[in-house]
Image (cartoon, rainbow, N blue to C red; front, side):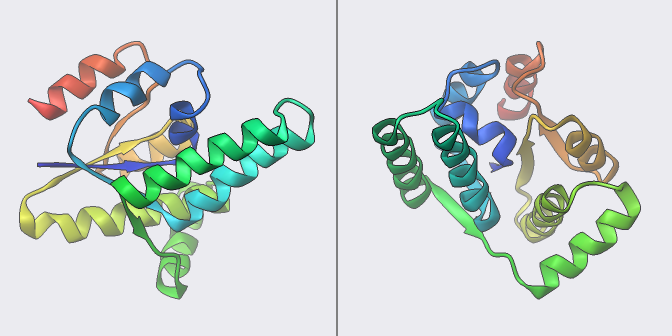
Amino acid sequence: MVTFYFDTSAIVKRYRKEIGSEVLDKIFERKDAFTISFWSVLEFIVTFSTRMRRGDLSRDAFNVVVSRFLKDVLDRFAITTVNDELVASATLLAVKHALPSADCLQLASAINLKRSLKPMKEELILICSDKELCRAAEKEGIEFIDPEQENALEKLSKFIT
């Protein structure tokens, strides 16, 4: 079985059509386990509230997008917490990979999740469009799919067959 862990850079593609959205749609057709960090919930809302503040999105459209996202989170996702232990792990990753703090939290969450899935022989796949975070994840032994890459659907097929 596969567990998909979503970074904010990728999950927004589910709710705003852009490069890679078709990959997210394909993943969402599946019944695999989905996981997201509680941090991503905040980042998602901030991303769309910023678009609203700039006038790129109406208040009504913002409400629809956030409602859809929160419904999906409640219905489909396991949510990883952000706690002192995670922040400590993220701090070490900041030193090692020189990533922004939010990416360090995401990577630490993915590493912890991978570790917890190992005894059940489940595979973790990070869904992420942040190139630096993808490189760091790969160095940490985490498989990833970047929905913006041309071979993303091919890579997805490899993991789910």
